[in-house]
Image (cartoon, rainbow, N blue to C red):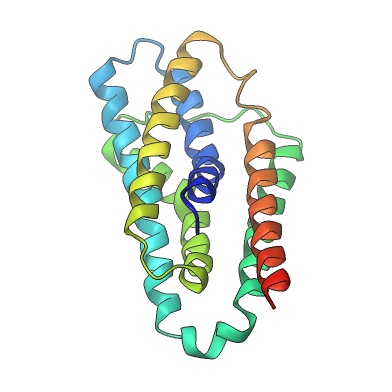
Length: 187
């Protein structure tokens, strides 16, 4: 996977963390930089480590899946992207967020926003030999998106985060299509 693709993938994955961060900024308008950085770090850590888990699981069964790996990567990324879009389009009630500065709440938020990243890790194992660069990029992009989300939440409110999940979903679907087309054209 090229670095540009990994960066775009990381941006798509970080959308959930961005949305949680915007909501956190809304609920904690007086959050300090260090508190924001702790929350952003936790979100980034989970987002970066879940693909590793998926990658490790997938590598143990790679030999049986290799002939159809590009179809699996396309399917998983498309499903995740579609899920993100559909969840955003559903009519949402006013959501209350618990205090994200409570460690247990922050861990639950970090885990919930990173589930999709584990599925992406399965796809990465099909097309990458090394996951370290992806982990670093995904963690860095998520940290940056989370810090930005908290700041935006403090300043502007929910107007920005409304469309972020749709854009993230479209990015993941596009990457899935790109992977599929690259493999089909190489055959």
